[in-house]
Image (cartoon, rainbow, N blue to C red):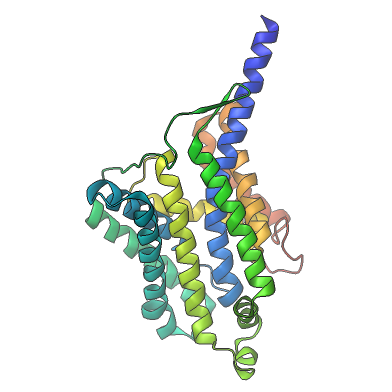
Length: 299
């Protein structure tokens, strides 16, 4: 009897770990979106979670309501979200360039409110859902249950992390984005199109958020107001890993997801969202640079 109970406990822990990695991968995807814009503009985009919401709602609508096949629905959703990100930069960020970072951050907060209200008008309050990309039959793994969609989510975050690392390190556009964040005037003086780099960062981060939204639909019920929570979790993950660090965003997301999942099992699911706020405050007080960020950073 004691051995059986021990096996059950180990299975439960493994289940919490799988759930934490799955959710943490989504947080990491949102955190990477924060990282892309921050590394180019030094702006914290508080509408990043709304890109996830748009991706999720769009793919569910296109596939379920308009009966468009899954792959075109996914690609079209990501494209539309990328266009929303570009439109946001063109209409809200670019006209106010030169006013300072803080007003622009406040603009992104206002954009989030607009996106939230717009999604309520378009989709209403009813949640949307989508079948798993590879079906919904669970996979048994050492006594725990692994959903096929988890493999898609984890695989996607690994591919995105590697692609972004290579992009910023080895491509001219990635290096140009980094140069803009360091000194946009100096970047412009050597021929870098700063305007295009900023626009590209918003488009890329929005597309990444859209991808995260597309991946999360089969494992949860998505609603018009999920963007606020995604923004909070993604921002906490970015701070935890080190704001501006792509590897840190992935590490921060996974750590935050595991902390939330394990706290549900050890303490109570009622403290799930409180863990995010606790981690965010703790990191800002103890190590504001995050796990993999530079130590020389202002609070």
